[in-house]
Amino acid sequence: MRNLVRGVLALLFAVLPTACANLNFYTDDELEPLSVQAYDEASKEHAAITSGAQYQMVQRVAQKIAAAAEEPNFKWQARLLKADDVVNAFCLPNGRIAVYTGLLKVADDEAQLAVVMGHEVAHATRRHGGKRMTQSSITQGAMSAIGAGLGMTQMTPETKDTVMGVLGMGANVGVLLPFSREHESEADVEGLRYAIRAGYDPEAAPKLWDKMAKLGGSSGPAWMSTHPASADRAAKLREMIPVLKEQEKNWKPKPAAPAPAPAQQPTKKVDPNATKK
Ligand SMILES: [Zn+2]
Image 1 (tube, helix red, strand yellow):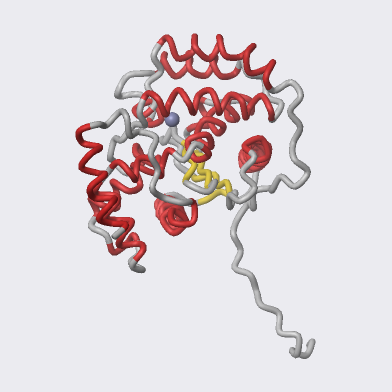
Image 2 (image 1 turned 30 degrees about the vertical axis):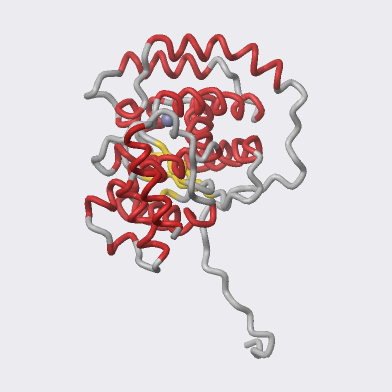
């Protein structure tokens, strides 16, 4: 029944696309299996780096941005994936962050990395993935398959790529599915808010966008193809800096803010009856 309702509404979206951009049929729990599987897919393609200065920086920024995002139920994780030619990063539903080593050549200091990570995390906290899943009949079909216990690897390559694209990994999987302008603006502002809360210099945001614009064009970095750096993007961020600084001047991290786990280790069950060697 729920699928039928979703189907009918999906038809409506074709007629009223802008009015429905913020509807979300999916709970965080429903998106969880997709988030886990899409994260694994990304890590299959590129090895995760688990030590060194860049890794430490990614973990440090991820922890601060996670605390700033105030989503205690997210399963925060951050991976640095080895791909020097991929200028990209993403955050899947429920807080699974990936940064490609290529991004660190462009976002070449910690504050700029925080701006990118804040922006990507904001797509997750504003549930943009679920909202886009809601708008696409292809991904709604995929959700039904996941609900029936099928894995992402059992989907057709096209469906799998579309799902991963909708969740925000577009440029990595060869499907270009930029977020809407509305979602982009929202992620810019919320992301900047998180960077400010985390104590980073907000001036890094317009600086980064100016730099991206110079690299620009469709032949530019992957992140650019889904995040067009129009001239007014940096200008809008510059305008927002004093506003957000004022709004956030009294913000304090919640004591129970979770730290992202660097890597998920399978939990070993301890047998209390086992004899020690
Ligand atoms: Zn974005």
